[in-house]
Image 1 (tube, one colour):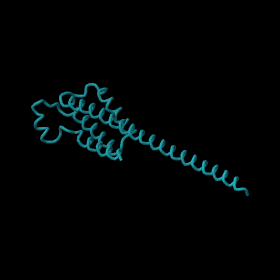
Image 2 (cartoon, rainbow, N blue to C red):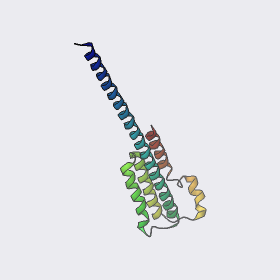
Image 3 (cartoon, rainbow, N blue to C red):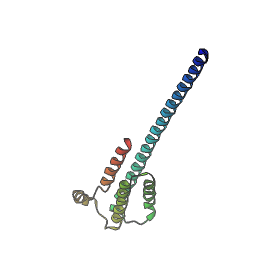
Image 4 (tube, one colour):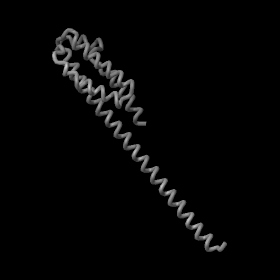
Length: 146
């Protein structure tokens, strides 16, 4: 075989290998960037969802202390948020959200409380039904960061 052919074949093979390596590197980099963006987007969605749940549950819990549940439609938004948590959330976070819902429901059906009773309730730990939910959210979001 002629030396010119060997040089040409070697050059073409080198170019092909270099092109494939460049393509593979670009594809891997692009894939990694897409995955990182998806993780950031997922975490942001969860943070917004959990924040929405905390706002709505806090509002209803405060209302439940002073009022009976005259309009069950008040709870609809909270049920909708919990259903979203079922789609995107961790199992422990969902369990804690459901516990918060039960506590709010029980508080609505318990005797109404007056403002001066809050000090006694706070000492007994009944005033923060969202604590366990918040801890579960923090643990889930911490794992999602990794």
